[in-house]
Image (cartoon, rainbow, N blue to C red; front, side):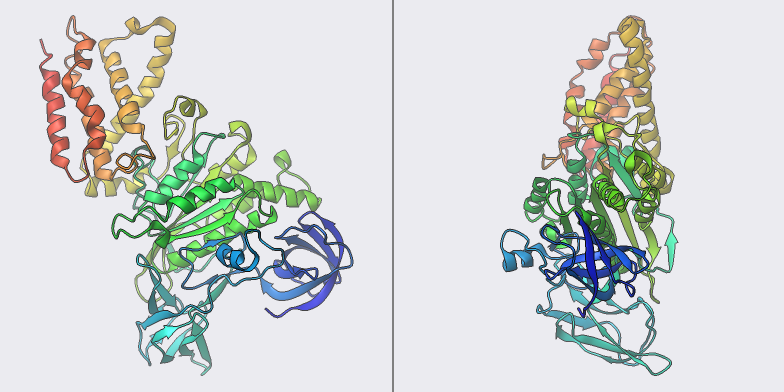
Length: 588
């Protein structure tokens, strides 16, 4: 990267460096600070003085040292080689850093985001003389066993293909030449760069209509998230935010996963790194890392880089969405990102907003989540892609009224609220079914009806009513006891208990129970709801004994229904009929 000396440091305050003599600097321009060449970004300009956010430790840097301008904005490198990588917050591969500087990240170290020496087998999909436009696919590279990487015409380039090459190429080699209407020739390589703070272009946005299948029953059945949607997981310490996000990342049916560890503990990222290579993709048997990009900016890494890490992650995610893939981004946690913004805002001496957060917290949060979406990709073909964003929020003390949570809830359409009380009772996932919500239930209803079962939405709706009724009845039981309830109300309690214990409870570390397909989820819930459907006209009988209902042998089979394998739907049908007929034997 070409640099020239421009400014001189006059102040250093943690990750904030102020330099004078910066009259030609531009907002969000990348600069190198001091002779150690620490990476920074201009975040404020006042005359010829610039405020610089430094993404490395500034200890030992002092006034009088130089600042070098690059003339470029903070960008990510996009091309084959992103998958299976683990980057820091500004897209430096940690594996390459380890080779150059050992176990600790040396200051001022510069390594490319994508390997320049590795060769890829480029297979053209267009021919010389073809007319192409921005976003069209020029060729393909088999990046991993799971993902075919599509080399697209860069944004702003139109014209005829005057030359195209096949065979083994490095990312900086020219693979195609496009001549525009003015006769200007544009050389296209497999390597592109894109500013992280600007969302990538698309033809249009579509209404999300397909559910993101996570395999977690409470999420898929009760609070579904659509592909191209956005959701948040707020919750107190220890309630299971990270485990929930990691479970979704492991088992969801997105084709590409971008996992951003933003300010969380290093051991949590270590868990991801150890588990993902061992877990197999159910379709191909390949390790899940072959569809995953990890951005690690943990709590012991520079604070300022947290702000960049979420943008780095979402730009990479948008790039794969542009190829027509279903992409899911996990950000853990956006609270640490907001805290980094608060620290920088304080050092800049800006007017603080609520709880010390900057006044622009809401707009930055909205800008991040709004980059999610289901799109019609650029290009003359009919490619469609989706980017689903799931952000964890870590409110201090579990207080959901704090600014980060509230600003997140304003822009996301799914709220998976974690409950410390459920976690203490060892009910996992500890998602509160009374406070959580989704605004995508109508969007995905047709998919459930068409792909799963005609009555799937009715069964879901009835189950939700059972859980809500249970909450009301529990108050009565606490006040006046179980004897005050009518037989039908006791039936509601029994059914709701089965929903909670046999359906909503799920072991994320059990190989069988960790994932349930949509059809299996439907049948599990249908079997449980059959208790309610079949017993309604029986419980009103005189001298009806609820203990007889509980002691039916079929009740034990309902508990074990989660062990029935996917595809064996006839076993569920037989079980549902057995539940109904067993209950009918109690009829007097």
